[in-house]
Image (cartoon, rainbow, N blue to C red; front, side):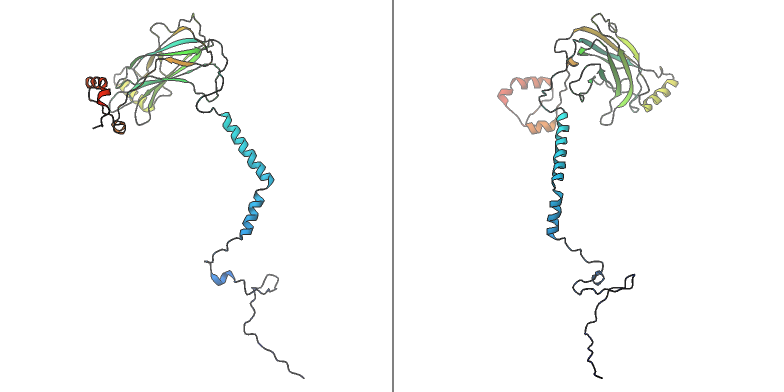
Length: 307
């Protein structure tokens, strides 16, 4: 019987853990197990060739077509909006309208908006709407804001608002009364809605002195009307406020008969800012007499630094 030489290998073969079917698979020595390095092992970077291949797969003809269609839809959506600057959209065709004058006379018995002053700083924000065609569907309604009358609940404005191209089918005027509270939001004191079903040259309007309308409290500030109710219980006039408004027809409007627009009057505000004066290098005097004298010699004195 011949003897055979059996040698024991220096490194025993490595086996994976047994699978569920009881078989074992040798693991190649050049692929270290994740357990050899622990949980801190960094993931291997993907092959650049695979990345290039994924990009090539993403830029298929169908994907390029979808991108082109999406870009085209965005351009169409942008073209629907009115462009800035000069608008080449033609004016809508409308019959000849009328020019009316609206006068905001006064309000009375308004609620108190400023508790610490026991008064209000009221103003009117009016909106005029009518059945007239619009140039763009995004066009806002015609609005007007009166000046603010300080520290009173019996404001007197006597301001006119002249509007052209008001249609014969009538209009709706909504007046919202506010208490100005800068820089906080303004408190609503109520609103008045005036509906005129028909306008013509024979329309008498609302009379020479206007008409008094009751201010609706539903849209008003609850805090202001709560204070007004408490004061009325202590011997005040009551809770209901009123607004006096006048209207009359001035005649037929001049062409083009397209949209309602404000004829006048136009208001503006003069504002002096020390910072703008320093930036512009302009110095303003303290009183009107020196300003008038300085304006006469502006060409001689030139520009002075603001001090």
